Amino acid sequence: MSEAQTLTESSTARDLTAFQRNILIVLTEEPMYGLAIKRELEDFYDAEVNHGRLYPNLDTLVERGLVEKSELDKRTNEYGLTQDGLSAVEDSLAWSLSKFVTNEERAEQVRSLIEKHE
Image 1 (tube, rainbow, N blue to C red):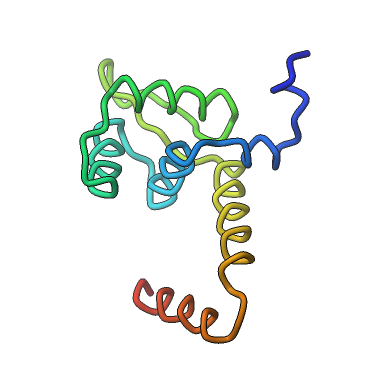
Image 2 (cartoon, one colour; image 1 turned 45 degrees about the horizontal axis):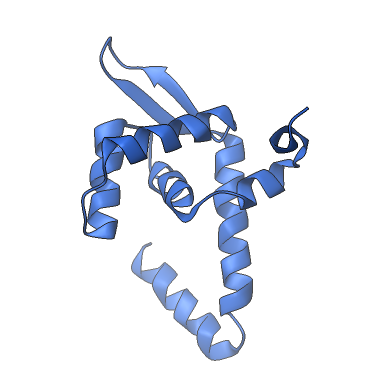
C-alpha cells in the first residue's frame, strides 16, 4: 500500500495544493465542464491557466474521490464535487476561519462577507 493510500480522508484533503482547493471551491457552485472551470480560475488568478495544469489536477481530484467526472458528449467531460470534495472545502474553510477569527472585530468581518453573498 502506498503512502498516499494510507492517509486518512481528512489528511488527504489537507494535502491538496492551493490550486486543487480552488478547483474544489469553483465546483461548489455547480458541476462544470473543463473550460468553464478554467475560465473561473482565470478570473480569480487574473492570468491564463494552462490546460496542462488544469486537467492533471482535475484527474488527481477524481482519483482521490473529491470530484467525479462524467461524459457530457464524446468530446466534453463534466466535473462535479462529491460529498468528500464538499467536506474537503468545509474542512479548509473551518481551518482558515479558526486562524482568522481571533476576536469579535474579525468575526464581524466574516459576517459582513457572508451577508454580501446571501
